[in-house]
Amino acid sequence: MVTLPTLINVYQAAERIQHVIRKTPIFEAPELKELSGAASIHYKMECLQQTGAFKVRGAANKILSLTDEEKQHGVITFSTGNHGKAVAYVAGQMGIRAVVCLSEKVPTYRADLIRSLGAEVAVQGKSQDEAEENYYRILKDEGLAPVVPFDDPMVIAGQGTITLEILEKLPDTDMLLVPLSGGGLVSGMALVAKQINPAIHIVAISLERSPAMYESLKAGKPVQVEEKGSLADSLLGGIGVENHYNLPLIDRYVDEHILVSEDDIKTGMYSAYNSQQMIIEGAAAVGIGAIINKKLDVTGKNVVSILSGRSIDTRRYLQVIAEQQRVGEK
Image 1 (cartoon, helix red, strand yellow):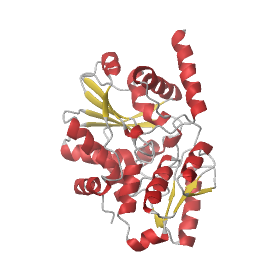
Image 2: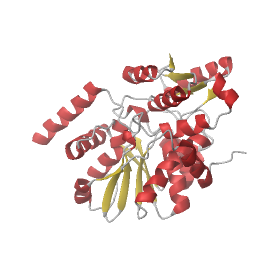
Image 3: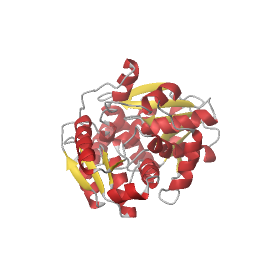
């Protein structure tokens, strides 16, 4: 029988990882408040983590909980980029061997960043599901400790510490906007929010191009979807052949699911740049784009949108900003 993580596990995670992660700041977004009619809108700046994304929380909680013997053998994961970088960073800080399995769809700049942190990178397959198959092969052959991207109670608890920080600063929060891919982030955040204040409205935001968890929830079991290229490449990938923790937690605690387009993502990225001079990746922009393009109703609400990361190819980022500037000038 699967035992789901609890609020106590999240408080334990907060204590365990406090010397590894940053308590990221929360910024006001007055321009979005005025545009949308919300009571307030804030950004939780997980893009300012040392690794550039929230993933370091879950990776740190998992790796720090391993036994000394497991640490000596090393760790292994599969990733679309940000989790792999987080595992490489934490393992590097502790002098632990790390292997990160990526698919051919993961941009080269992400693989290079992971290597720069000292991890071994194994590239194979045309999707995250195929990268996961490679991960299982190496895991079996080399006896490394698994640090999976999302479907693990320790990882989920680590991501849930974000909500603890939000509610410490903004106890009147009514709505959380959370990017959704494999589900570790929204699982942990929603678990904490609903245990502390069941009235908080949890909105999970998926890609129109690759809504793996969204389709899996409708089917009641993990569903594979075709991976199509996206500006929000860290939201690509499936939820695994089996999903023991995220699927039931999201089904229980998430109130609303919305899908965003590539245009929504571009709008969000440009708004963050134009209004706040912030560089964020596509996945981090989904909440902003959803608000601007009226994909959800935030009227009268105290809203927090999670800016999940900043890992993006510089050339592609500049192209998006220039394109959106031209659109605005017409």
